[in-house]
Image 1 (cartoon, rainbow, N blue to C red):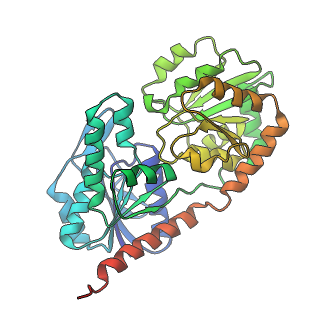
Image 2 (tube, helix red, strand yellow):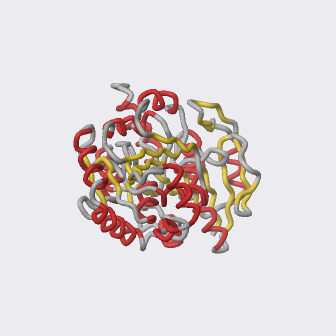
Length: 376
């Protein structure tokens, strides 16, 4: 199969979109498919997984490169002659690729991954929220299929009148993130550094940005016997340092690979605070590590956290409930262990290999529909 992967985000930017695109490309390469990658210009590598990476002109918006319309996009697609176009979190660049595919008779699969309309609503943009949904609908209506990561996203897109929807989740690395890591020497050293008096470590992993609402961890101020640990970086870092002044907080900065796995395995409780996650990959990584999760009952976590089984879902905005759920886990070692084991069991069938096999199946379905004869 020949696939053009068009992504609004790619290396060196590291986020959920980039990470899932990398996994897809790894899978395509491992299974003998051919691909090219089209991304906004931001210093991306010339190749990834043996596939050529093409950059197109872009502008920077709030630290993120935004691909601009350019005739090079259609030329790259036409020259490669793909069987299908994969548009990751499509916006301006993805929309152009989907439209080019339509003109060239090439089916496209759009991956809904960024809650643009939710961003507009959170920033009190009023009427622009409706405009944002019109843009989302315009982009995705051009695609042969839109894949959504969660039931919450499915409901939002159906309510917006977007058709041709199906579910596609995200995989998790079940080897890198594993409960056995908690016994590693590296984990023990990190725990000793973070919690030298044996405190219960409540951790967070993710971008430190307004939409992640990390400031809600301030609800844990005064809770005895805990240490808060934040992994990640972003524009909210200075503000969070001020808001958490006097609290037992350690900020580890951005981490990846084995270091990130070690950080997860040092946690006793994972706290997720954002209400606009279309999926919630860090929740899966915490579960794979065997850690109970506390998250808002909103967005992707609704599908990932089985309330009372592998974690707790609190009412968004209810800081008292957030604190109560975390406190219950802090004081009960057996509850943490039981929920952590349940979390690991919940993700055992979610390897990236299996998830990407599903994606290739979706590619095949849109290719088959396009090539099917039209009944007269």
